[in-house]
Amino acid sequence: MVDLKNPKRKLLIVLFCICAITIIIFSYSSTSSLQLAIRQSNKPVSKALCACRQCISVEDEDPWFRKHFNASISPLLSQKNAMLSNDTFKWWQKLGTKGNKANYRNVVKKLFQVFPSKEHYKDSAPNRCRTCAVVGNSGNLNGSDYGALIDSNDFIIRMNRAPILGYEKDVGNRTTHRISYPGSIRHLQNDTHLILLPFKTETLQWITKALTTGSMKSAPLPEMAQINADKVLIYNPTFLKYVYDVWLECHGKYPSTGFLTLMFAIHICDEVNVFGFGAAKDGTWQHYWEKNKFTRTKPTGVHAGDYESIVMKLLACKRKIKLFEGR
Ligand SMILES: *[C@@H]1O[C@H](CO)[C@@H](O)[C@H](O)[C@H]1NC(C)=O
Ligand SMILES: *[C@@H]1O[C@H](CO)[C@@H](O)[C@H](O)[C@H]1NC(C)=O
Ligand SMILES: *[C@@H]1O[C@H](CO)[C@@H](O)[C@H](O)[C@H]1NC(C)=O
Ligand SMILES: *[C@@H]1O[C@H](CO)[C@@H](O)[C@H](O)[C@H]1NC(C)=O
Ligand SMILES: *[C@@H]1O[C@H](CO)[C@@H](O)[C@H](O)[C@H]1NC(C)=O
Image 1: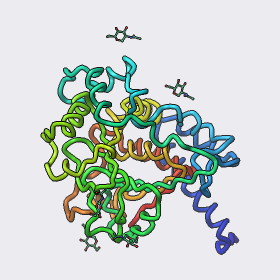
Image 2: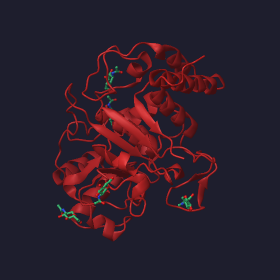
Image 3: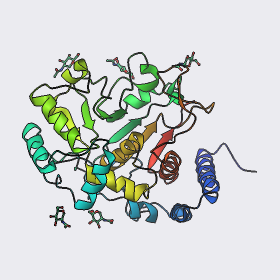
Image 4: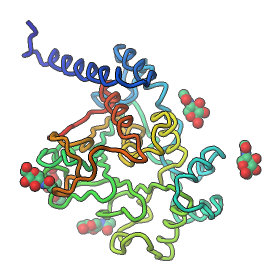
């Protein structure tokens, strides 16, 4: 008989089940590199490179993780990394709906006259333990009671329009970072970092203009007033392409905001706790704040939702992140 009272053994069984499920899912798909990754995931974990209980970076790294994770590509744009390779520029330009007529070099030059160009979060060290909560928008947060757990993280990263007012019990009451693109920026607190997702040169032009001349087209006025130039960070297009090429192996057209947020977190945090991703337990897809307004039957369209979800589960299976699936 298996002794289910032993908490360690219980945990192992749960982990084994998760890995087994992942393998079953994957035996139905043709993606061999992920299949291989699962087979290689049983190696013992060795010395941690941070001060948390469970670190993302460890010595004697898992081969799949090592093959994908690249700490040398900065998630955020700075003056130093702003010049894009021709390949990256071409790919990135195609994501924007309108043509990129603006001259990228000039736009970036102006941008860093408005924003301080700092290298952010490159302070990984054996004595650092930075915990992060990535909070998605899924209806599975409704009734989850995760609020206090989410708030206990150092960084709390939310996306686009997700509100907290009235939902604190389930989603927490702090937001240190909010990832968004122009037009979807909402609910900024005065101490919240806005991480702007640029899908074209014009986005960089827009934020520069908005903060210097107060031109606020395509974002509601009250929200723009809350943007603090010192708190604005810009997602690096080179990092965006790295996520697409390396982590998603070019599945979909480009990564979803949720996946980009998760990738941002695993590159700047030592411990990542993930909330509010996937469907609710009853299989429905909706935002936690929208009653009976179903967003879709399944993630589809320009994003490779299934592939993203499997990469995320694999990260959890390898104990790089912790998934909280709500109810
Ligand atoms: C990480 O990215 C840099 C810059 O693109 C590249 O030169 C390097 O080879 C990459 N490292 C790995 C391990 O893939
Ligand atoms: C990149 O593109 C520019 C302009 O199209 C060209 O002048 C330059 O030689 C290219 N660089 C490389 C490394 O291909
Ligand atoms: C936020 O929630 C925590 C509990 O998670 C509570 O202690 C704190 O008072 C709340 N802060 C505000 C400003 O509501
Ligand atoms: C931010 O807002 C809070 C409450 O609304 C206020 O107490 C605080 O002084 C503000 N901080 C700054 C830097 O504006
Ligand atoms: C959240 O769950 C409660 C109880 O199940 C339900 O009454 C409520 O309508 C739900 N809210 C949303 C926004 O779905």
